[in-house]
Image (cartoon, rainbow, N blue to C red; front, side):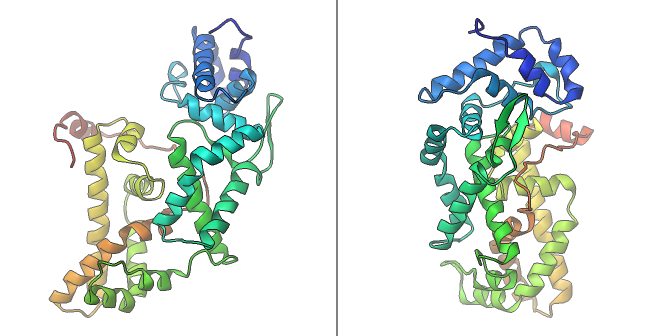
Length: 333
């Protein structure tokens, strides 16, 4: 459908200034924008998003360094359509969002071992942040409200909502106002799952403080890409296919990078603890098991960050990365 009003001008005007000349030269931009709108309307027929508003919503969050011919490639029209409707204050859209996506908040909080009634409080905070608690943004005469207006459509909206939930919870923990989570040392000491044997539980209680310090130091010594990979997987909940899509590499390469980052983190943490703790060789095995059992929760705490923005600053691949990507052939299990 391209017979409606032109969406090119509002889309281009809302885009980053550096990108506008290139967008003006894209010959089929009108058609592609209307196709994006049509796909969104087909998925949410009960909602009526203004075509111009959607064009502005998508254009304002484009990457300034993107190739103008490719800016719409890989976007998620159905998620963008719903997010735009919510950001415009459409109550029917917000109700549809609640039914379809708020369960992701429960999933995120369950992974962090946050249960009722605290999880109910955090869930309400997430909802307020998504739809209320933000300074309205006016672009091209269109007003967008709430954190939902920051969704750019480059990843699954469900994953994005989980990320917002995790970071909202961590922010409340840091503020110390609602006691969403206990302090770090107590959390590590108490986080003994059903499979913990007595020795492992003892290690967690005894060396909680030393583990926290060593883990933080080991994580800080990792490279930027390794930290980003771990954050994508453990905080944002991205799987290897989604991580591979971000870096434009095969899923096998993404899997190998992620596993290598984990092993580097575990090895460095073990090295630091071995140097600081007076434990026997037999106890070192328990220390290693303690590290592995705590890695997810510790990464959530360390990498959650105060912002709900998903990182877009992926560094360029070097020659060795490209060689590895080209040579992939074994699927990860």
